[in-house]
View (cartoon, rainbow, N blue to C red):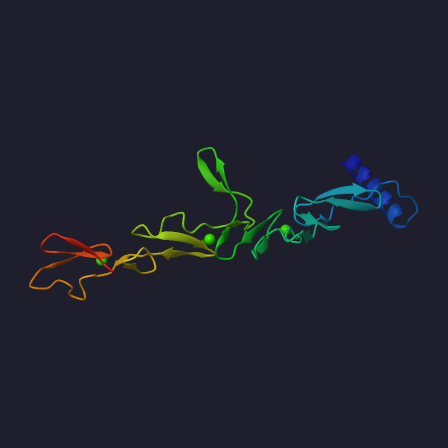
Length: 187
Ligand SMILES: [Ca+2]
Ligand SMILES: [Ca+2]
Ligand SMILES: [Ca+2]
């Protein structure tokens, strides 16, 4: 106990000497106050400290979140959203990131809105209509006798009651047939 108090007194005396600027042999740990933000690693130096910042942060105290959007990485008017050590792009309608096969699945990598979506790929047009890919949509060019945004409406060629003398009209694809079984194209 006596030894402990003696040692304690010597340490206190050393601190007092140091505070008075008489003798400063002990390097102060400038990291003891944990000055680095965002899990930056503090390295104690003589009379100073440095912060080693984790990925995505910068600044003397790692206080600054690096703006990964500063290089404007998103194409075709996509909006860049800054994150931690990264970013992502929000694409305008009609665009998406590049698709790459990854093992057996296709994953959207490098989402920079660089690829224009082919809205015809799903085959939205019906009745042998030709699909024309557009920006953010598609246009169906209907064959004769069909209507609608997807050419889904088969026009009724019997509407004008072309069959006479009691014959029954049967609507077809751009044509009609009579009850006699003869198919007559619409002209
Ligand atoms: Ca960032
Ligand atoms: Ca398109
Ligand atoms: Ca028809």
